[in-house]
Image 1: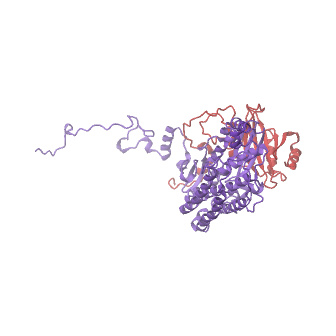
Image 2 (image 1 turned 60 degrees about the vertical axis):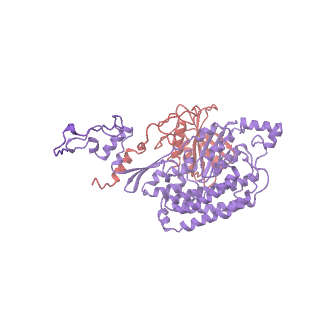
Image 3 (image 1 turned 45 degrees about the vertical axis):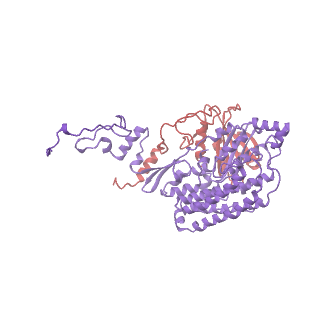
Length: 184
Length: 456
């Protein structure tokens, strides 16, 4: 475990660190979801920590283990400079499953967060395209929740033209830019 | 004989039986019921602009109208297309041949590996991991086994480590063979495909001899391997070391200085190291961009730090550099295999713990302890202590991570696979804008996106 990482985080966040543990050499810190974005920004921008990689974002449903809050969103960060890894976890309650997005910190979290939304129904506030990614759009429920039966299936009844992924502004920008010989 | 020069009267017209309507009186979807108007007027649908025609069709299909299609051509590449190397869709809006907008859609091969993993004992997940990156299935076995072993806190015997390295590196070579070979065949260079796939076939023969299966080997086990390698393994592996460089050299001589390939690959889809890191790229694509991050060097496992080998890096991160990096990595892998073969110790290939690795069949059939251990392992599974771990290995496409949460039971509580493809492919929409349509096959091929791993 990297002592200096923990020291650094303690200096900055103090009592806001809810739980700290060392799991098989990797530091795990729990932080409230109101400050998780601040922590991720700190982890990336702080020159001592320099966690340039966001390797993974996922979630765990602690329903069967009686977890309170029910969900945890898990970030795995890696620093190329120091070679250290850290796991940041934040609890997310069932009745208000929302976390701030980290797309503004690492672009890599774009699809990772969409996958968490798809599989657990945890929405990421501020994500530009909070849409299912692996399951189709007629899918109901979230498959990796512990109370989702593994044999429940959903039919896809209509094709997806993906137009909902283009904003009106972008559409106007593209149309303005395109030269069209026939229309001239 | 009577000749008539006047027109036939209606009664005299030949009688024909009416042709049955194939649609049973109903018109197929998309065809308007309105008659073709008088005086040559077209129906309202056919008279309208292309956009109105599309609007008519999409209303029938329950789609929304695409205002961009008035000015731009829409091309759907995939989901099933030979150049997509798997099943995923890329919708492109083209201005001439230039891509103005591209949106990827994935999930066509989604089997919810992670949900399935929660329903199976720890040792029964290996066949599922084979199907993640099916081009190098043994590397997935190793990645998953390492994660569970990390949680169990065990170290596998030296011989098993060496065999994992040898077969893992051969799997990596197969992965790169397929990537380079198919990338080149997409660009019209068919010969290389045959050269490289012949080499791949030779590695498959070894895999088949070792594990019984060619592609989906399922040869890894928690605490070691399915069984020891066969008697002639070392000779077969050494024969591969002799034959494989020839295929790599053949392709090298054909392609590396090939004007056509350079024109199609150099400068295409270049990416800066900062961007590649920001997007979470790992593996050959990241190294092509000039970042020398390889899990085998940065966090050595199985004595990778004791072998002599180097991490090749590119400079621009374009399609050409990815090709060069993969070619060099294959040579480095061969060198690792040779060193591992030189230092292949004798001994067991499984840990000596009957609660983790199954007891030998001799003990199962002849001793009560062996039989009890065998039954308990089969029915209750490996008992993995509660905790969580993120384990990482270098897969064929980059950092292959397994995040595992255990509640201390025979079934995993949560398994998450960090698939390198998933991170690599996610910027395809943005990065394709401004590229040419014909570049797509070069780009997607060079990223080596494997749908099994992408969709899991």
